[in-house]
Structures are given as structure tokens and as C-alpha cells.
Image (cartoon, rainbow, N blue to C red; front, side, top):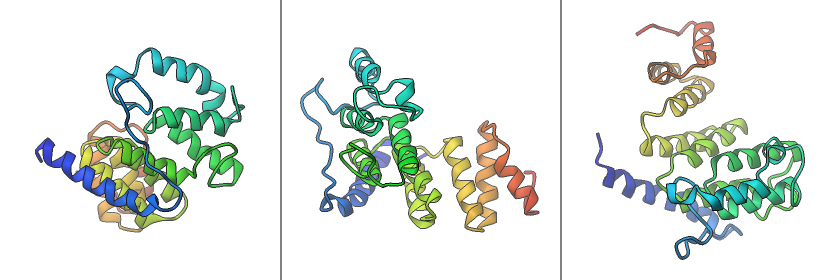
Length: 213
């Protein structure tokens, strides 16, 4: 297994390279300030107490997350508040990505930035968090940007190589790209890791390439 220090160093390097392409395009980084002040790392246990509760109670209600209506602003405005406070909030990132599909725009109403900027801010802010690049890859794959999606899946994989959810989605992308051997390999990794959904296996079976290990 690769030493954690090497993984962290590589994650910082790759995240920085990915983000730099957007830094001059109206996508400023989320800057860490003094302890206890926004923005905060969603994955830090110290940041998941009362402050997160207050942010989510006001701006990430069930109606906001399910994109029914905003609570203090438009849906995009409330999600923007959450992502300004916690740039790598995974469910808020996912909700913002889904909102772009509903509103048919890269930058939903009252969102400060484009969805791609929110993903890059998250990756830049928390370069050792594997979830933002994985969510970004899913978004890119859904928009037929398969090579960019693969790059972000690989970034996530470098950080968390044994994640069955990631492996399943990488298998789906490789299947879409008709790289069936790689799709099969990632399918077995995902299912061996306990991933429950049968969709990838069914795709491989229908294509006649499924093989039991």
C-alpha cells in the first residue's frame, strides 16, 4: 500500500493542477481562515457539530436537498450558502449538480459560481477528500465528457482506491467507453467490496463479457 504521506502529496499536486485551469476564469479558491470560521472542511469531525446543524437547518432542509423550493433564498442561493460554508459538502455538491439539470444552466439562480467551479473549489479546498472528484466525474460522464470524467475518477482512486462506489462508477464509465476488460475488472472489485446494485453486472452480461472470477 502506498504511504499516506505520498498519497496526500500526490493529491495536493493533482488537485492544484486541475484547479489552476479555472483560477483565472472567475473561479476563486475557497480560502481557509482561522479555526472555527468559514469555510470549514466537511470531513473534519470538529466541524460537524452545532455549526453544521445551524447551516443545514437554515439552508439545507429536505426541501432544498430534493430541489422542491428554497428556504431562505432560491434553491441555488441556499445551496451556495452551504457550499461557501462547507465547500466539500457532498450532498450539497450533488444537489447543485442536479439543479443545473433542472434549470438547464451551468450556474443556477443565485448561485455565485458555475457547477464546475463549485467542484474545483471543493477539490482545491480539500484535496485529500475523494468524494468531490468522484461526484465531478459522475457529472462529467453524464455530459459525455468521458476523458475528463476518467481523470477525476482516477484522482479519487488515488486517494481512496478501495471504495466500491467509486469502483462501480468507474466500471460504468469504462463500459460506456467500450473498454470491457477494464469495466469487468472494476465490476468485480466493486462487487467483491459489497456494492449492492446489479446494473453494471447486467450490462456486462448483456454484452456477453461477464465472467465470474
